[in-house]
Length: 329
Image (cartoon, rainbow, N blue to C red; front, side):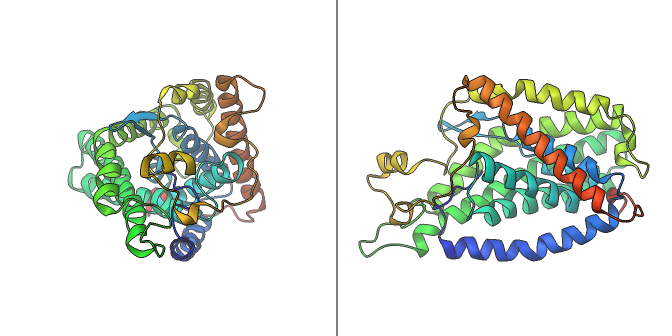
């Protein structure tokens, strides 16, 4: 679901970024109010979990690949605004350091995965939970929230892809950016998420939410978290298991390189001929000179470390320690 650069027009990217600016502003304001200084580093842990979940690629129908995101997971535990910020920072690290998702399309990727996904997921979860006040009802709420969150996010990405050939073509009528219209992009994106990526998102969300509530319930209460060894054990386990994501062959839909796309369509869209000159440090989570598996693990460690440090620094500069837990709002 990570949209690369040059698949969306610059104007589309600008619009999506402009939409996200007030979303980020409101989310930051809520996080400042609702997340205490002592709990701020927890957002780093949850951002790290989201980052790691996105490294576990799974094969999807049609020969493509997909992944979970964890937006609803964070929203359930810390609130949707906290999820928005956590996933946005994780997406930024992926784009800048690993080339996973574009720089120009950062706003669009955040709209889909850091805004639509956690907010849809959280409010579906809240709606179901309020009407079925039982343990089974909460489980059903978690399942439905995480499932609909990622499916609706995939639909949004499909629409962003699909409107490109309708709006942006050259003199010969060829697409300048994504060449596939809505009739192709929507089923190609949504059906695999309905069938595979959605259930994977549900599985991760159920397991991790229940795990956190069992081993460290204070992480989602007003008191600062104390028992985080088990959570760090989970992070370490996911880092070690992350190379499983390498087993999924194929390219995620809409993330093909220009040459690969030209082989599929017979031409290279004009907007893809001039790529950005930004040099990515660790492209595709592959460290030069290292075996693929080891490079993937090193990338996971580096991504987790950066996210934890970023939110730790944010916590250090936060002056007050007054707030209420986000999920209580």
